[in-house]
Length: 86
Image 1 (cartoon, one colour):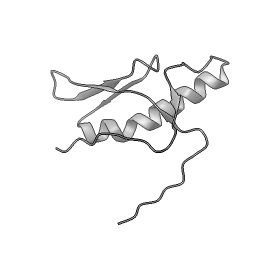
Image 2: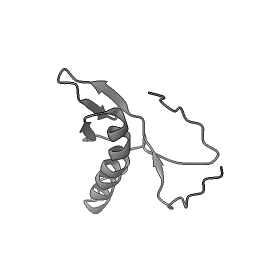
Image 3: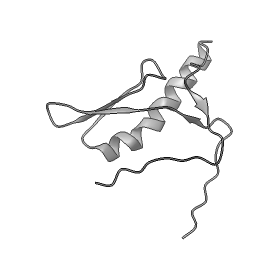
Image 4: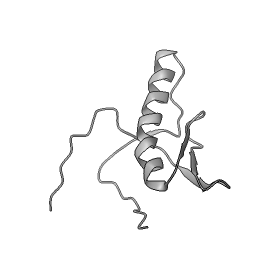
């Protein structure tokens, strides 16, 4: 199967730290993007929400004239990633 997707000109990669909370939810933060926080019921939801939250945060920073953090890097292809199999 071939999957194709148009990649936007402003495509970024940030590291995520996902933690299991005492209440059973999952929380994601990123050392690359101050203020980034996602909490969800499962890891799949965290991963689905993370790009939406990160993009909104980056756009808000841009609108306020806050420089983009150096740790937020533009994607260059090819990329290598890991997949979590649950």
